[in-house]
Every structure is written in C-alpha cells, then in structure tokens.
Image (cartoon, rainbow, N blue to C red):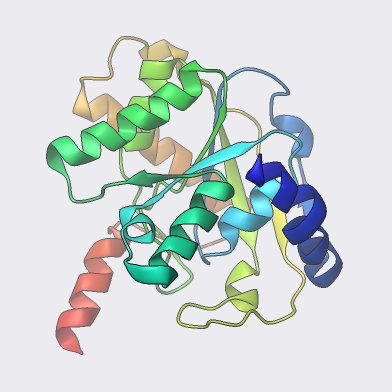
Length: 228
C-alpha cells in the first residue's frame, strides 16, 4: 500500500516534475507474468526512477545494510525501503546469500517484477563491471525472462557520497527480453550461470554505452579502501 501511495501521490509527482525522467523501450517489459529487470547501477536513486516509469510494481533486492540500522534513523530507512518495494539481500556469500536469492525467486514465482543489479553494488567509476551469477540462477529456477536496462545520468543527479540530489534530467533505456530457456534445468552448472550472466552484461553495456571491465566492482572498492 505504501508503495503506491508514495509513487502516485508523494514521491512520484516530485520526481517527475523535478527530474523530468525519460524512458525508451518501455514496451519491452511484459505486462503480466514474472520478469527480471537487470540494470546497471550508477546511483542509489536508480531504484526510484525505474519503478516510477513502469505501471507494474517493481521489487528490488537491496543490500541488507539498509535494513539493519538502529535507532530512529534506522527505523525510518528500513520503513522507507520496505515501502518502496525493496527486499534485503545478504551479500556476504554462502547460505545467507542463497537464502536472499530464494526470496527473489519467490517474487518471480508469484508472477512479480524483480529488479536486480547484477554488478552487486554501485559502479565506483561509472564503468560497467562483472556481473554476479545470482541473476542467472534466478532466471533458470523461476523460468523467467530477463529484460536488460540502462540508467542514464542518475549518477549526476545523485553522485556517490552526496546526500542532497542535484536537479538533472535522467533517463532509462529498456532492451528487448532475453530468453535463456535453452539452459533450463542447468542452474547447478556454474559455467552455464557465468555464460548467461556475461551475455546479460554485454547487452547492458550495449544499451548504456559504458566501458565494460571484467572485474567485480566490490573488488575495486575493497582495493580502494585499503589504499586510503
């Protein structure tokens, strides 16, 4: 309920009038049934503008840090994330990450729209980085099509490290659905999962025009933190 209240009456009108978002290829999103929206990730506000432009509710997998804060600030952030349709995902690996992906599969099996950032985190440089294979596993387990998405200029509207957004027009390009049904039943094959993920990243790079770097963005972030 809060999702639609924010989208229709409060946050949605403000974002539309202030940032004047444009979208191309919206017809590529199926009007019914499960679908994964696999997008590049250059700003925290990516998860606001993509759902804003679609008629269907979009549920995103978001890092668990947004849901574990304490005190009033933690409660407000947690309530907001739940309100805009975000689900907590544990990126620490192992069983915790597996359980998070299972939550995404449940959304798809219920016929929902699941938004995911295959890179696993925001791009620290504006380039496109290697995708995590969790998206491929969910595609095969839920038998869902995947639609590649490219966000434009959201990083200029809300650069990493900023609190107050800058007024800047942002855009979204939505590509045609990708069909991986030929790999049905092979979700346990890590080579297949990597192949699917790489194909998705190639398509996102084509739509976004970003330079692709075959390194995990999280690896780059850790290296930068150690050097600081």
